[in-house]
Image 1 (cartoon, one colour):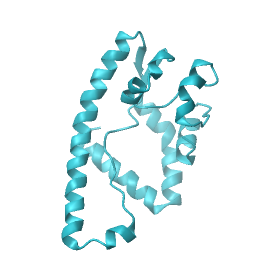
Image 2 (cartoon, helix red, strand yellow):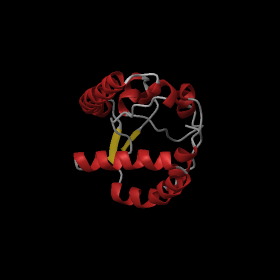
Image 3 (cartoon, helix red, strand yellow):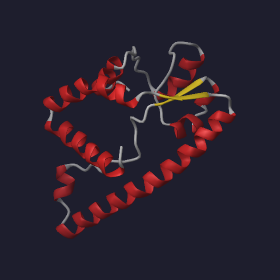
Amino acid sequence: MESPVHLATYKALGFTPTPLPYSEVYQATKTGVVDGFEDVSVSVRSQKNYEVAKYVVISGHLTAAPVFIMSVNAWNKLNEEEQGWMMEVGIVAQEATKVTYQAETAKTMEFMKEQGLIITEIDIVKAKELVQPVVDEFCAKSKYVKEVVDYFNDYRAKIGR
């Protein structure tokens, strides 16, 4: 993605990021324009990107913890009861997504092994050390980024990650 946060993160990890539209990932990988791509395993299967990849690296940097986002204007148009409904629905959706995502990820990993992909995991502790300056930089630039980071840190603490 052509996102300053993503680009800075991958640079901190030692990669040379090359943003391109998702629709071009398959062909760019197939022709060697890029050496790899970021994606969640379920999408790798559904988009058939496993056909052009040889390796899968499990980084753990994406989680199935969707953030419910609504503009202040839209939120303020809701009465207190409706806001409560939205909060409840967001929590239910988050839990359902987490369960489904975990189950589908496990199935997809087995599928990729069957396709002959080599699966490895990165050193999460080392990756966090390398990326922490990026997190600190973007949190210092925006209180909203810091709120999201704090939210996910709290979430990870609750699930033991």
